[in-house]
Each structure stands twice: as C-alpha cells, then as structure tokens.
Length: 464
Image (cartoon, rainbow, N blue to C red; front, side, top):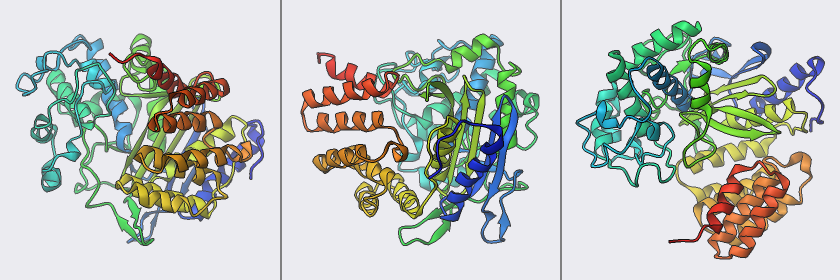
C-alpha cells in the first residue's frame, strides 16, 4: 500500500515508478509511460519486451498501436476542415458520400458520427470481416462492410459507440480535403505538432521500433496479436510513441492545430452521452475535468488523459493486454494525493478475466474474479461482470455490498460507482425504489457523477 500524499516533486517520480514496476513484475503490463505537467515530463519509463520472439525491450521510442485514441485525430481533422470552410458539422453525410445506401443518409450528420449517435454499427462484427481483414488497406476498402450494416436507430436519439461511424468520417476527410486520410494526418497534424515518430502504418509494412502486441490465453500461455489486431484506419490503429503523444497534447494546448473555439466545440459533450464529446471522452476525476481517449484491441491497450485543472498529461501505452487502464488509474489516484495499492497477483487474474470479457465469456470471467474474495477490485469486477451480463444479479448486489465494506484506501473505483452499479442491478430485478435510492446515494457521494445522473433521470422519465 502506498500512502496518499500530495504530489510533491521529491517523491512523485519514486511513487509512480513503484506503481509501474509493480504491474510489470506481476506480468500484466509491458509498455511505456509518460507523465507530464504543463508540458514538462515528470516521469517516464519503459517496461517489458517490445518483441518476445527477438527479446527486444520496450524503449521510450518504441512505437505502439494506440487503438481508438486515433479517433481523437479524426475529430481534430474534421474540426480543421470545418475551420477551413470545407465542411460543416451539420452537413449530412450524403454531401460527401452520396452513394451510401442508407435511407437515413440525409438525416445523419457529421456531428452525429463524431459523438456516436448516428446509429451506425461496428464493421468488425460483419460476417465477412475476418475473411477480408487482409484486404482492408484503404478507407474505401472498409465501405462495403459498413454500407451493408444500416443504422439501428434514428440519428441523435441515443449513444452507440461505433467504429464504422469513425471510418465514415475518415472518408469525409478524404473527400473534403482531396488527400488520403494517411497523408492528411501527416501534413496537418503530425508535421505541425512535430510528431516525427507517428504514422498510420499497416501491420505488414516495415516500421522501426515497432512493438508486437501479446494476449494471454485462458491456460496462461501468451500469443502475439499479429493475426488478430484490426487493420489501422480512421477509427484507430495508428502507431506512435509516448513522447509524440505529448507533442500532440502540447500542440493542442498552444492552439497549433485548432482554434480555441474549435477546441471548445470538440471537447464539449452535446449528444446523448455526457461523457463523450466529438471524438473525445470527457469525465470528472477528483474534482478535475479529464479529456482524452482509451484504446484497446487484442494485445494492445492505451490511455491518453489530459487534466484541465492541474495541467497533468498521462500517457500509458501497452503491448501486453489491458493493463494500461489500471496503471493509468493508479497514476491518476497518486497524482491527486489518494492512497494507492500496488499491483499483486490478484491483479494478474483480473487482467486475464478482462481478456475473457473482451471475448464475450462473462461467466468465465466472473469465476476468475471470484478467486480473490479479499481483493477489492476483483470483488467489484465480479459484480460488474454479472450485471453487464444480466446473470446472478442478486449475487452481484451482495458482492457490491461486500466491496463497500472494504477500506476506502483500496476501493477503486470509488464507492459512488458501486452504488450506481447497485442501482443498475436493482433495475434488472424490477425494483425501481431501491434502484432510485442507490442512484441517489451515488450522487450524495459524488454529485458530479454523470452516469448516476443519467440513470436517475432515465428512471424518472415516464415511458411513452
């Protein structure tokens, strides 16, 4: 256990390194980490192997697949083109994609695609995706799969995270700019920001300092993601380094890529989900506003977080499963003076369980979480997995009650999240009174917790 202390310069580097190395020691993190404040690096590290076959270590210049963090680059591109007068966020997609076979093409706008309220789906779920993976080398190559999946609801009516929608935005970038998406990023974001180690590179193209992603199998063995990682496009998959991501962050802060007005537009949620703006995630943490994005795919995980009040930037890039999220959460807690528990073997079981969740085996994941009844995060995830899967809901409530009895120092996420999950569980059981009471308790603990606000508002909205 690391005691909660103010983020002082004389011990912050030591404490952050203890966090990162603990995750490396139990085998659930390999990658690079960079923490900066007001653009100045306060901690940097590289852990584990970039390539297990050749025994090449990760270094600070190792280039990682950052997954869906790439969506922020697509959003910046769209806002740049809006500033240049080449498009409007209110434009229907039919203006740039007149051949799209959606009956709704004149009502789906660029803004809807940016905040995932267009009703578009996920091309990776298409029955022909796996067979065509190797052919998806340009944005145009993705379009037949996307065009074959019509929207599932009226644009603007609700949130549905959509990789397909972001690929459509890449097509809009190409039509509006006259450049390929790859060239547009190079000329209008990478070069102006000084990002010399970033590119949208296909997996079979040569690239120096490339990391290989690795996944852990159910039996504990490790496999590379070479044959399973999605191809890069405007929905994610670009390659970069932690230092280049800091250059991106600083270019945005000094308005080198977008005006102040466009930045405000991009980072302000206006759609159905109040924690998702235009291509950027937005949340509150310890009284601060955090903007950025996470990225994940088989064998890779990445976190890019920008803290508006404190000036911190946290970048965690991993090529060993989903460990980056946990590392980033522990770093965040330490920066804000909260107690932090270093990684233990139970955390390794959690990462394996999370891999099972990503593969759709929620019951198998719940069994793994159940191994560690004395480990608070495992207890929380055991409950969450049951609620998300809609099974053993009563047991999930009991698990959340157990979680709430743990010492506050080891509760991550905080109690407000547990009460919100209890509310969801009670809704599944049809007990609206207890659901409402749980949401109210969540907001009593954290009045800024948007998920509880939204759930309570939805519960109290009469059905028509």
